[in-house]
Length: 127
Length: 111
Image (tube, rainbow over all chains, first blue to last red; front, side, top):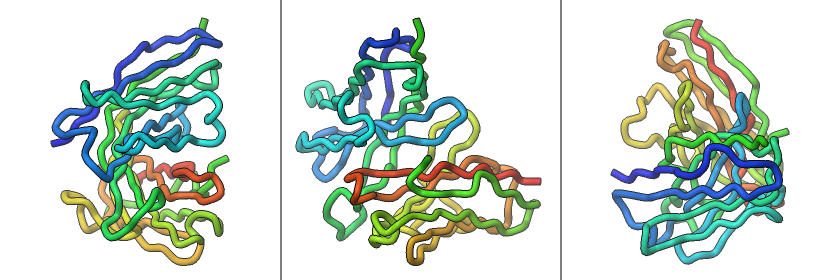
């Protein structure tokens, strides 16, 4: 059974960089055809896709966050990471990592849905 | 403001049928991109409920079903149970944003 687990600081100061890691167990992050993504949820609000990285290393970012986001993969540790720079209080949220899986007989990013999720980690931006 | 529009809340009595709508535009649902649905129980991570418009992952009861037409999609829940009380989110892909988008979420209350 695939499992994802987020880790990182729960408190980040304004203007600093938020850094989180997602550790994947029960499967390889290098398996072909999957995306690995980050999604966040501000307290009491809905879900917002942050960005995703393909198994090959190519990335997709939410245009509203693109200038501040970097997602990378460490295959040796079976992990992928999120860096979000210049954070403000508006970045306070529960951050989830998730696996994107493709619909069968479908090619390309539009074919993907998130089938496995981590439990989420709350990151608060405050001085 | 979410790209996909859902009603903030719906409610129903046990045993009843409820539907949750998800309205998009010509750059997402209307572009014939698939719609997926997630259930988020209080204090937990979202769980995949429906994928590819109308497919249920293993373990999801057949009381849950999805449909899509034009620029909209719907999630239907029949035989409503107390355990169905949760937030529900739709998700698709948007070509204008070149990325994945979610609806704002709908809170289901079982009366």
